[in-house]
Image (tube, rainbow, N blue to C red; front, side, top):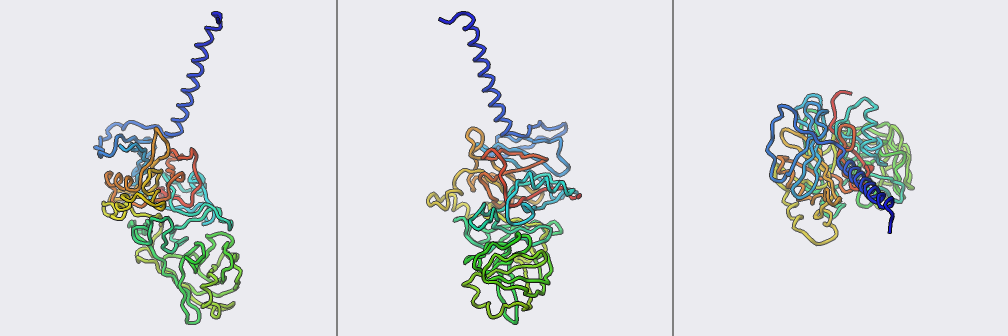
Length: 433
């Protein structure tokens, strides 16, 4: 039988254990909710929330610049949705994009990218992970995106429309990009390259820019934005000099061929281009394309308005059009068989971009975290956005990549418990640099 002194130590041990458990719970809660929710300020008008919203928290409200908002919505289906809003007519704010590590190859966290921008004098307010891509492969590509990317008017990347994920067909529904023109017009379309290379009266079609050259995309232009080398194998490649850079959505330039190789993996000159052609596709080219040959490269994006886009980013599925859920997405929501559609019909972390006549929205939905947030299906996401008054929306890369950075820190709770490196960032930032 324990003596009185031993009995007195038992409650102390229990108290210490309970204290440690409480500290652990508080630490987990702090990781999941990095921003403190604030009550509306004096004079703030109460808003009526849609039935799909259980609660809405204003995050870091005291730090909002004019025209910017940051909220956490609690969806009635048990998910946490983080949304950064920008008023479209706000003076001093704009939409922008940033490429990870300033080039196609490789990945970078949003925190790293925004820090790099701030060191250059730019002030990002919010950013969400954007395009899809591969994380690595056997050819040394440690990350490479598949979608369109236009930055400061430069056409950095554009693929052939392909069904890469099993549920995003090459159509205006399944291969969608968002862009902003210099006069502030918002566009959401399937964008096509329409690029040609003309040499000695022969015209050859260009299939992609800074993409993987293979049988699905047999003719690809590589710019200095891709990396140091093309990383192709057994491709017929031409090095072009005396070209105007950067490439743009409406482009025409003369060039001179300075090198020809059939081995692939050419060095990309800092002020030139490389055209890669698959071996099987190059048969019609070989007699025409030799060193010292001259020609002209032409690009004309369609729809035509995209030729002047200043900032553009690609996703895959269009979720909303004119305030209505895409009919194909409704069909997909009813589909319950086949591996290719599992991601679309399961609750997962998601990221997206939307807009209406008044606002732009950068959105991340937390998921895979029982007791906190389980995520959404694609249809759930579209339906929820519609209830908030969003008219147009596209789906971005999701899963553990889903991250919303805002006002200096990660606002949401990424499903892996840490911020993952991504391919590019869709941004809201100030105009001043």
